[in-house]
Amino acid sequence: MSEVRYSQEHEWVKLDGDTATIGITHYAQEQLGDVVFVELPEIGKKVEKGKELAMVESVKAASEVYAPVSGEVIEVNSTLTETPATVNEDALGKGWFAKLKVADKGQFATLMDEAAYNKFVEGLH
Amino acid sequence: MSAPTQIQSERRVLRTISGNKGLQIEEPLIFEQGMKGRSGVDLPAVPPHKDRLGALKRKSDIGLPGLSEPQVVRHYTKLSQKNYAIDMGVYPLGSCTMKHNPRLNEKVARLPGIGDLHPMQPISTVQGALELIDQLAHWLKTLTNMPAVAMSPAAGAHGELCGIMTIRAALLAKGDARKRILVPESAHGTNPATAAACGYEVDPVPADDRGRVDLAAFKAKLGPDVAGTMITNPNTCGLFENDIIDIADAIHEIGGYFYCDGANFNAIVGRVRPGDLGIDAMHINLHKTFSTPHGGGGPGSGPVVLSAALAPYAPVPYVVHGANGFDLVERNGSAFGRLKGFHGQMGMFVRALAYMMSHGSDGLRQASGDAVLNANYILAGLKDEMTPAFPGTCMHEALFNDEFLDGTDVTTLDFAKAMIDEGYHPMTMYFPLVVHGALLMEPTETESKDGLDRYIEVVKGLAKRAKAGDAAYFKGAPYHTPRRRLDETLAARQPVLRWKPEAPKKAAE
Image: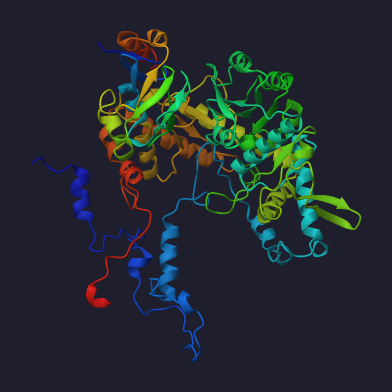
């Protein structure tokens, strides 16, 4: 049974066993506007929680995508390189960025659940 | 089918046969106008000769367009007429400082003794030019109260590179270049890029609710691995960093250096000396603060003033007073190296010094005062109709967020497009990133009160129109430009970067 959690930097992470799938939230893609470029990490790269995992560039701005949990990159969504618009179309599904092999599942529990994230976003405006 | 709107039916009536609209003339690409065999010059036929190119001989036509001289002149004149420039009207781009380029500067830069100089002339023949660089350096050091200046950086970001490389060299001389550089979230994008290019990890520092560096958060990030910090003052929100001296003390305490992004020096010239604030290095955009042209009008120039601690590591070459007049130091063991061919942007040095000397120190002080006054005049004029990002007065630029557009369905982008129809270049939008839907306006000292009043009236009118529920008007803007709303997304996703000829026909071979 997988569960989705959210970070304050507007990433989502879905945990299946020790594999975490990471993307940006619907709110994040809405704020960015049309995504025109995505830079993905190399497979095998070890990232720490809170450090840069990927880059996303829209017509408005370029932003870092931070790793919500620490781990090693085991898979990236290379379709985003060709069709970055997927991030806008399906941020929470087909627009995922990377999969990490997670070392410490405890980090996952510290992230917000959907209700808490929605409340967090409401407070931003 | 729905009935055509008024705008649509008007357009049908007003459509011209040529597609031109008065002086707004459709202009094909120069390659599309070219005709084989046509030329602007008559060259004599090549006399018989023995070809010695061998395998290097050209195999096919290089495909340059053929045009007569008047065609070429008309083409580029028409293109230039599609530009908007500071010479045409208010240019409120914030963080860019588009100010008037006095014609006196241009005249001086074209004097034969200056305009005809060559960088490879013997030193003895360019004593005047070296004296000019030395004079300009003197002005920069005096205005900033800093003991040294590296003149060669070619623009702001190049100056940042110079500053951080100098800091790195100074730290390396002590045995450890360190790892991190602290950069506020509101920084110009070039700051983190520079730090990263110099091998540093960028550690972002949040802004507080006053739009300034959060001092407590800054101090919490300090440690022995911090090489320094890069802070813009006044910052990109158009605000003076009130805690700047505390920031300088804190960074020095851990043995780091303070780099100041001096892009906004035009707000404080003659009033605040960065050397008094504890700054170790700061670039000065001559093309902003000292009125030399930029943005296609001329190369930038970004000299970097340096503290005594960093001065020994400054790049070569630099001008010194030698035994036989002025001399250029081309080698120095402690310098981190060379940043640019020759000594920097001479043409910009001339213009900047002309600006300084024609204004005098009192005039420069007035220019910064007028720039701040003008920005505050805009802020005061618009604050009831729009929403200032932060309370209180500003420095040289007025910053608004998009709260005043809440519920109107009009975005900052739509608002900017509608400004184009009114004959104004839009302000900077969506920057700084720390402000939602940012609209950043910098009038500079160039604008008169009359000009500002007209500008305020127009922007206010647009804000009222947006709030009155006329979102459709904004979504369609601009209406009066040669091209309407461009597809920025498609342009970024599938850019067409050059003209390509149609595939050649087989028979033509």
